[in-house]
Image (cartoon, rainbow over all chains, first blue to last red; front, side, top):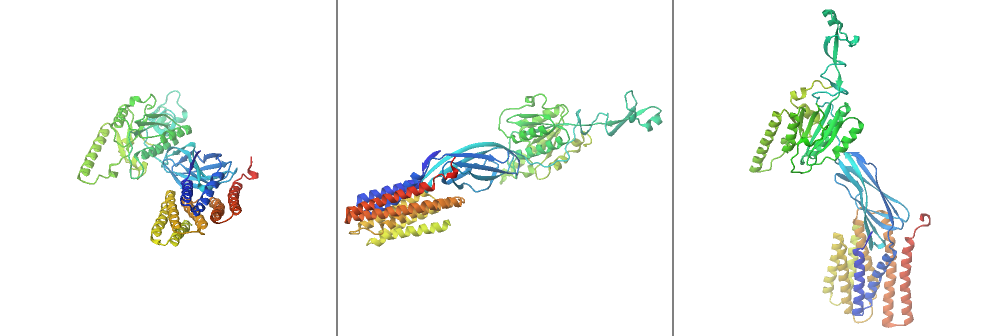
Length: 424
Length: 175
C-alpha cells in the first residue's frame, strides 16, 4: 500500500513549525503554546497509525445475468489492526449502474473482525464486463496518514440481451432431414395429407385410400408431408454502429438475433450465426440447449469494429452456410461490403431476407438548407440500395425497435413469406 | 450536522481573530488580517479543500504575533486557550470534510470523536504547561519550570497511551 501524508498533517506540521520559528524570532513564548497542541496531534496520529495488513475478498453474486437484472458484489475486509476510517470505491464497468450505496463508502475496521460491504449494481446493457476492481483507502487516527491501494479481483460477468418472444418466423425454403415442425416438400410419412399414388410393394396397408381404390379398381395409397426441421443462419452486419433514439443499431441487431434464434431452437431447428464486419466471426449451425448457450455467448461478444479491408463470403469456412439454409440478415444497409455479401449469398441459392435496423424515418435531418438537402440525398441513396437488393431477389423489411420484430417480419412481401409453404 | 460544524468553525475563527484586535491599540489592520483568515477558513469549508485552512490559520497566528509585539510586558493569559481553539478550529474543518463524504458510518464518527477528545485534552494540557513554563522563565523559580516540563511530557505520554490502548487488538480477536 502507498503511504501518504494527508494535507491535514502537512498543515499541522507547517503551522507548528511556523509558530516555533515565530516564537524564537520574536521571543514570545505564547507562540510556543500555539505549537504545542499541533505537535501533540501530529505525534499522536503518527504513533497510533499501524502498517496496514488487510485481506480483501470480492465476490459477485452472479456471473450470468439478463439485461435489467441486479447484481450484488460483496466486499469483505479482514484487517489485522484497527482502522477508524476505511473508504471503499468499486469501479463500475460500462453498461452497469450503481444502485446503492453512494460511493465512496466509509466504514470502521476492527482488528481481526471481518467487515462486509455489499454494492448493488444493475446491468443496463448486454455484453461481457469485468467486475471486481476496488479502490481502498485507509486513514489512521486523526486522518493524518492515509494508505491507498487498488485491489484487483475481477470476474467476467456475462449479461445476455433481453429479447421479445417471437411466435412466427420465416418459414424455410426447404427442410432438412431431421424431424421438426415444418411440412416437407417431399412426400413421405407424416400427418399432413399430400397426395395419392398407386400402391407399390412395401407400402403400408394402413395407408390405402379405399375410396380411390374402389373407383379405380387398383390399390392406391395416401402420401403425407413429413415434418422436418430447417436450417437458419443469422447474418449480422457489424461493420458499424450508430446511436438511435433508444440504444444503438447493434442493440437492435443482437436482440433481434436472440429472439429469432430462441424461436427456432424451440422448434428444433439448427441455427448458425455469422458476424460479418471488421472482425469476421461465425458459429456453425447446430441445435439444442448447449448451442443456445453458445449463441448467447456469441451475441454478447458482438462488436462493431471499424475496418477498411474488403471482405467476401469466401472467407467463411465450409459448413457455415448449410445447404438450403434460410439466411436472415440484420443490417443498417450502410456498408456496401455487407450488401454485396448478402447478394452473393442469395445468388448461391440461399433464400435471404434483410431486416433493416436503421429506419430512415427515425433519422432527423440536420437543421438548415444543406442539412435538408443532404438528408434527401441520403434517403435517395438508401432507396437505391433497397432497389438493388430487390433486384437481387432479397426482400427488405424495416425494424426500428418501436414495434415487435414479428410485426416487422410480417411486413415482408408476400412472395418472400410464401416461398416455403405453411409454417407449423 | 455538517452545517452546524461549519457554523461552529466560522464562529471559532472569528473568536480567534478578535483577540489581536482586543490586544492592539489600532484595531483596523488586525481586523483586516483576521477577516482574511476567517474568509480563508470559510472558503476551505465551502470548497472542501484542506489547503485553504493552512493560510487561514497562518494569518490568524501572524495577526496574533504582531498584536503581541505591541503589548509592552507580561505574557498573554489567553495564549493556551487560543492554541487549543486553533486546534479545535482545524479539527472542525476536518470533521466538516469527513461529513461531506457520502454517509460515513456512525462508528467512524465515534472513533474520530474519541481521537479529538484525547488530542484536545492532551494538547490543551501541554499548551497550558508551555505557557506556564514560559511564564516561569520570564518570572520565577527553576523547580516550578521543571514541574511544568514534566507535566507537559506526562500529558503527551498519557495521550499516546490512551490512543494505543483504544487501537489494541482485543483478546478474542487474536489468532
